[in-house]
Image (cartoon, rainbow, N blue to C red):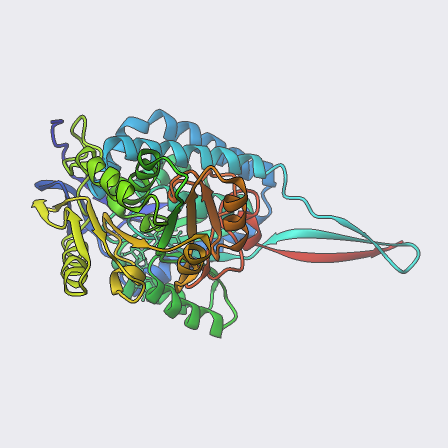
Amino acid sequence: MSAATSPVEVRHLIGGEWTGSAEAERRNPARSDELVANLAVGTASDVEAALSAATDAFRAWRNTAPPARGAILGRAAELLASRSAEVSQALCAEEGKTLAEATGEVTRATDILRFHAGEGWRLKGETIPSSVPGTSIYTVKEPLGVVALITPWNFPIAIPTWKLAPALVAGNCVVMKPAAITPLSVQLLAECLLEAGLPAGVLNIVNGSGSVVGEALVHDPRVAAISFTGSTDVGMRINEIGSARLARVQLEMGGKNALVVLDDADPDIAAGVAAAGGWALTGQACTATSRVICTPGIHDAFVEALAAKASDFAPGDGQEAGVNMGPVVSESQLETDKNYIAIGRDEGAELVTGGAVASGQLFEPTIFAGVTASMRIASEEIFGPVISVLAVDDLDAAIGLANDSNYGLTGGIVTNDLRAAMRFADEAEVGVVKINRPTTGVDLNAPFGGIKRSSSDTFREQGSVAVDFYTRLKSVYIGV
Ligand code: NAP
Ligand code: MG
């Protein structure tokens, strides 16, 4: 076991200064005696100060050449890469995911910064022929102004980075509210950006609760756009408030992602895909596999193969070698997981394996079989390592059941039947389709987002299109 490091002071970043004093604590979810960070807790006046700093910094930042803005992201990427071991350790300690998962996430953040550094060279408009002789028309992508970024705890550095990088390269100033329980990774990212030359006030961070800091941001008329990732309930509320004053709102929310397994699949391969999607990251991914829909010829063999994989996912301290599933992030999420086990049992589902707390906040990888569409465990997001298996007669029924959800984030199919796979890709009501791959895990250069109650379904995140949310098109006519 690696030694506990001394706690870090996590503060607000306002106008280039670190402010606030410690008022709350974050403990390692795998080791309740390890204090990871002392946290400043923001108030409405901190939000006020951050918004005025961002507003003041906007003109100079938008007038900075886009490649120069990108160059700062590029330098920050190299600084983050050079601190990868330290940042991964901090992420592992504050969120609980395994060191391998945390290291992968920090590498992801580094690559996102590198990718968007290059976007500084590519913020292109177009020329359009005019109906009037001697007139030219061209478009420019303008930044929106001050944008608010509100993020969840499950990817403490990747999600903030995939919002920050396109926002900044496009010339916006940012006020960010990280998840209250995992703000340390964002502070370390911000240190890299400041050291890379990001001017004071361009990025501001206010830590604290959604009900105080988040609400203040969402209501403020100086905030031109809000990009939010989190639960559907909170997202719907933010949308109501932001849209009412015509702020641009981007929401990435919950999921109830289905994986269809067809008769022709190899049960062991299918179980591997389901286990990686459902249990890695402790099931705490918006893209996690939470429903597996099996056709009759493979159902029993699949359940048996999946149950056999559960021992590979014994939960433990994510900093210890060989552990590949960390603890549940918080006591309240643990209560949610336990509650859904009780709900599943009461609904008459068969608990095949797991369903219990191993110790502390360690929760066993869980399989429910005999789940039917009307059960709550088949329709509500749990956000824990719980896979519900549902049986159907054929591909038609599988697609129908996969689409029978209020959510529509990711969906997968395991099959070697190309025709079936392509039909699923065509008909799945989701934003991301995975054929023979886990429903989790996305490439940073491909558009990401969902439909239905998973997403505002307007602008996608990630890839080159990410910048669209953070820019507006202006059409300029020139007569000579
Ligand atoms: P959450 O409870 O909705 O919180 C997300 C963020 O919103 C946090 O920073 C939170 O602050 C803040 N917030 C809470 N109430 C607010 C309000 N009234 N106004 C403004 N901000 C407010 O979500 P979570 O528990 O952190 O994360 C889990 C959820 O995120 C799951 O539903 C998951 O599916 C979703 N998620 C979606 C994606 C995606 O891309 N679709 C990716 C990852 C996670 P606090 O820190 O005080 O709670
Ligand atoms: Mg929450």
